[in-house]
Image (cartoon, rainbow, N blue to C red):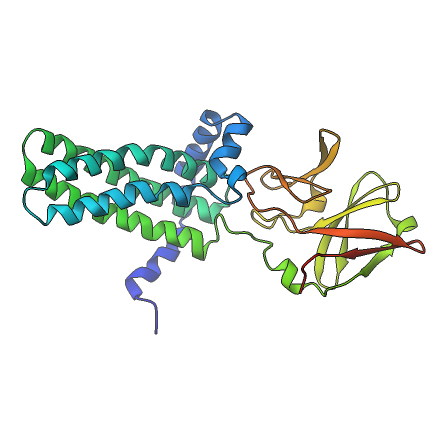
Length: 291
């Protein structure tokens, strides 16, 4: 079955360069307002291990859909007011997480995201006007504004789905690594040929690895950043409490080289971390639970 032709045009937004001035300006504002790295990590969802935005959008969407159902029946406006107000309040943290994630994406994702956020903003305005009308006793116009708001928010949600599933915003871009690695110990080169104290690249089959050596200790991670596939071996070497870390060169996600854990976002998924050993001068690696 072919895609509905009217919906195929959504893909054109990805290459709509006329959106770039707005997207770039808005991204600058977001980065200047949401500055402390610990706050950004929380909004990205680093503590919970995946993006926080999909969880928080359940509040406004759920309450607004529920209000629409109640509006079909008589004498339910009191409950609908509570639901609409709750949704408006819930839209604030949802927007904060969404804008934080969006500010760390590529050009095509930024363009679609601008339209997505604009639709949601218009939806919030319509629901706010609906609540004002209802509080003033004008239930009919309040209901009309609510249904208009739901239509606009639904369109914005469709674009959100495009961002998440077509453009893979928030997805783990290195999820395939464990499934493409042969189980067991495998060599990646001689210890003496590996530079010490800096990041470098090796491959295991067709899987790129980032390697860091300190003496006989060799740390090995998947080289493809889980956030948006950046090459970690081109990143910056840093430390967190004497734990060597790599900073992705694309969006500055930071990972522990020893464990692959996320130290700072925007990434929320850890890197695949390989066990390593030295056998007769050769470095061998093994990925637990590979295959």
